[in-house]
Image (spheres, rainbow, N blue to C red):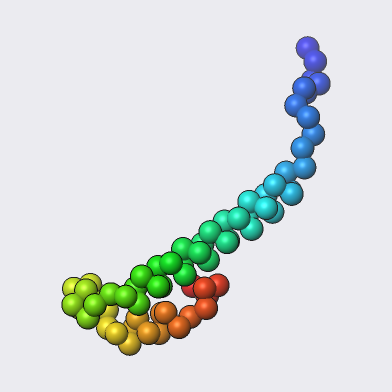
Length: 67
């Protein structure tokens, strides 16, 4: 029986790094999109979900990289 593997040696560190970068950029884009959408909600919409206008202002003034 042979222990030789036919799989090529692949540097998984590089692809993992770029995958994390891609995921981070995706999360930042989603935050930005969601905050812009939230800023457009009416007072009635906010009341329905129990969020105040000041909560919205606080959230929408955050930079996209901050959760």
